[in-house]
Image (cartoon, rainbow, N blue to C red; front, side, top):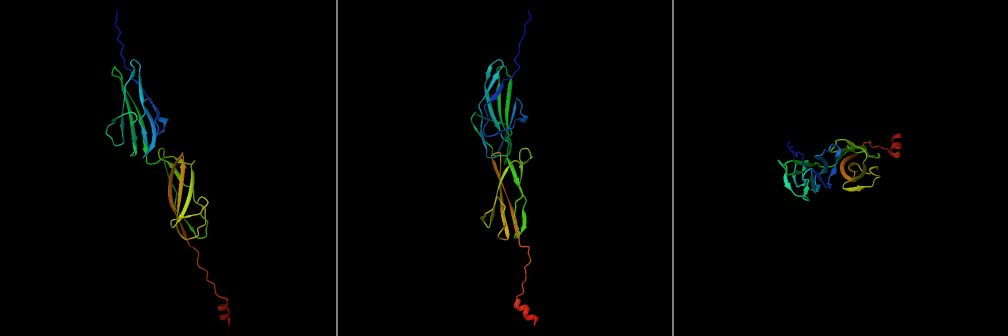
Length: 220
């Protein structure tokens, strides 16, 4: 008779509950790494996790968190709140080991930026008496670097600290000087703003009018 020794070399399979508070970015997901996005000031609660093993049926799961500046992950508990205070890559790392010593990990990687997108526009200058129509702002996705076009923008104007009545930024200035134009851009439920200056200058030379009486006097 020949004895056959069967060895368990397969680690547990870890699954987690849904991660709320961050946006899923599944394009690059693998079985052991899930991708998400968030911004500074946001937070998530560490989801519950379970591990199924081919021999032991279930295995215990531990969890740890690693911030952008941490040398190693710090032990945590399910339900703990992770607050994103710095830009960079944050990791929530789950680990499970079966009775045969096979270990598995699953990481939730959260890329954190200062904002979802940025908005910019150029300063403008017009002559007094001209109507002003604001140029469209530019918006850039901070995670992909790609230009955003499907946004909505509201434009307001102030002069000397007072609000100027406009048609979403379109108006004819009543004063020379510097106006502040504020763009409020909304995209995917998120809002960002930027300010530019509108300089209104008097470029018209004065018109000199000679009184009729003076002209008549000189003629004689």
